[in-house]
Length: 101
Image (cartoon, rainbow, N blue to C red; front, side, top):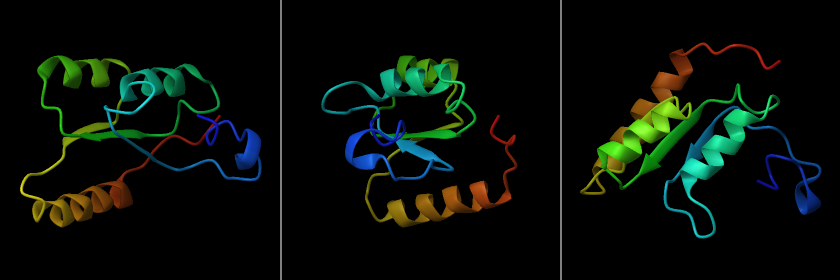
């Protein structure tokens, strides 16, 4: 969150155009981060892609309920990773999002 809020050593950073977020993080869950991002007027317009190993229906519904743009399960085997990342890039190349407020 320090990066998104440009705190501390991240004071001179930029605001991302897209957030790629895992559900399983060391200190807080990705869904908690998503909730914070979507609650902040300056961050809420940034599309958030959840990219995680979890295929739990509860987690998927929770992510969409909190405002995730897309929920992707990490592929297995990993050779599918490249295909999935390229498809994600194509999707966001074509997508149109509202301008930040």
